Amino acid sequence: MSREKSSAVQSIEWREDHVRIIDQTYLPGRTIYADIYDVGQMWDAIRKLKVRGAPAIGIAAAYAFYLGIRDMEEQSYAGFRIEAERIGQYLASSRPTAVNLQWAVDRILNTIHALKDKPLAEIKQRILNLAVTIHEEDKRICKCIGELGQELIPKGAKILTHCNTGSLATGMYGTALSVIYHAHEAGKKIHVWVDETRPLLQGARLTAWELQRAEIPMKLVIDSASGHLMKTGQVDLVIVGTDRVAANGDTANKIGTYNLAVLCKHHGIPFYIAAPLSSIDISLPHGDDIPIEERDSAEITHIGGTQLAPAKTDTFNPAFDVSPNELITAFITEKGIVKPPYTENLAALFSRD
Ligand code: MRU
Image 1 (spheres, protein in one colour):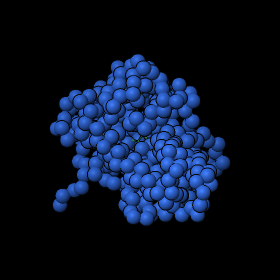
Image 2 (cartoon, protein in one colour):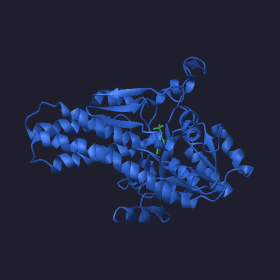
Image 3 (cartoon, protein in one colour):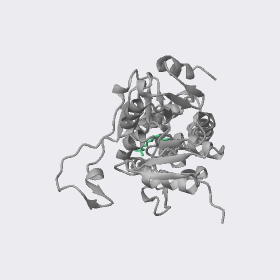
Image 4 (tube, protein in one colour):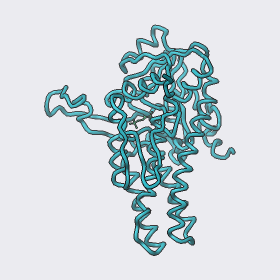
């Protein structure tokens, strides 16, 4: 029986009049699809991580924006625009850290502004077309990141990754996982350490699922094993994705990424960030300004509905952290590998074709 490669999994799909997503909260046990017909359903799906990963929530928000304006009865452009801006704000409020969400909303709002002289029916159709374009672009971008990034991976490399950055988190292939898929396909005989990624276990549930389907050699480890692995010479490089990169290269990613960055510096191990340009927020001078999402305490007091901590335990549950630019060896983008100085070299990406 031929096994479908995980790099071909499509986590979001436009289906004529609605969006179909893989509900990632059921993985790996069950592959359940959720059909989304309105913007409120998508807000909820993003908030609850049914669809997750920075590029994927940008794509999901783009389709949801269209669902939000599709049935709007407004007749005047002025009224339509006010309502569209409200939808944009609403969608962006679902999760604050990944800039891809705001990036997709801004791209749609700019298009709505540029089309102000067109009939509303045409504007709506153009927004659906734009959502499809954002989705298709992301697939090409992720492939490109994989092809360029795999050049950095030595033969036989032992690679550690955190969270899930694969097909599930993007249009297809992924960012950091795309590099891993491409290195594997290039015959580099890599081995991947998969961090479990507490508290929501994106590594254990999703990355392990993707890598297993793609038949890439890997082992799942608890997050706190990384120091031991590095100290005992079992990690050659770390590669992760990102939710937002500030103009100076400071990088937000899943909580625990900063720990890895510090450990890499201590052990002299390369620490790479795979980042599409849609995740780079050139408007933010440094990482201190990146909003960090705080999530429900039940995510850390319970696992799978079972209570671990005593009742009423006070918690602090930041979903992301920021790794300072000086800990980052290079960024892998669709426009090439970016090395320090980051302020100049990241800005230059935006003026390059
Ligand atoms: O909370 P999540 O699962 O949406 O967090 C996802 C991450 O932190 C990923 O590393 C990041 O979005 C990059 S995905 C290509």
